Length: 366
Image 1 (cartoon, helix red, strand yellow):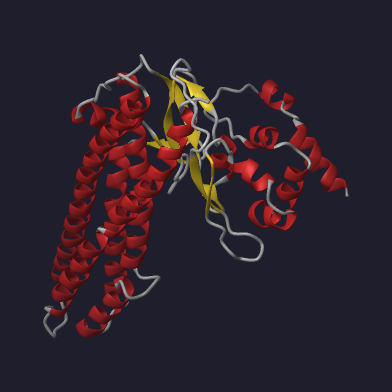
Image 2 (tube, rainbow, N blue to C red):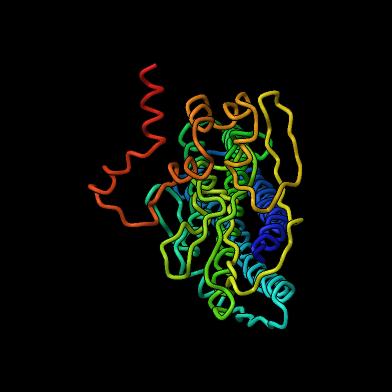
């Protein structure tokens, strides 16, 4: 049995820790947002009890804009520092893992500069056929929410009233205490950015490590999370193997993506390890979770295939849930893959009238 079984087990467990680290990075924004709320409150409450001139109002607005930009940018900068540290940890983790399963091998560990260069240079997928760079992705976060708060301040002044009424209205709009407040939205967006950007950094660190150890590493294996929240695109790619240089889906495939790339080892380095496992945590039709360890060889749709029809429908929806019952897991997964990572002509696309397509058409007729 290939070493990949052990690696799948190890990396699956490690992915859970990465998710928790990303959650911490997202929560790190809260002190900065609390500081914004306090500083903005101080500026607004310091306005004199008299009608302010246009210039004075502009000065207040500019001061608040400076505060929000300063605090949000400080968080973004700290987040980037945290990710650089994470990248270094990832290559060390990769090295220790590889050295433990390949007898007599000592991994090459790329420098922090190389990891950072790879992560900054690689594109991040943020939408259908939409990509950005890591630095632009992070800077767009703080710029966007600095503008959101600035717009709320401007709207508060435009509505008029006494200075106390204006201050109260603006603070009510941006507060962290309201789910629809600007700062609450900024907090949620930071969590999404943290999950996405951290996944990107971890993935690129793995790629940099693989490039430095090409004598043993021949490619990558895509690893999705086995639970209800996993996207169709990620679940369809689970356990697929890609050789170096081949087009491949590189996580994150979408905002807040939790999928990983793990290294694929040359088949010469093998040994038996039938006991290796990975976590599975689906919620069934009864609303109950069923956390357990399953074989590291099991794919996302193999897990679903073994569930009841009701559970499959709960997770995939009625159409796909019924379709999976009529197909083997591997064919079903291949039929769902969004091959945007691989060139495809219109004629080739027309030919992709695969088994899933035929089954779905038959269902539509019933």
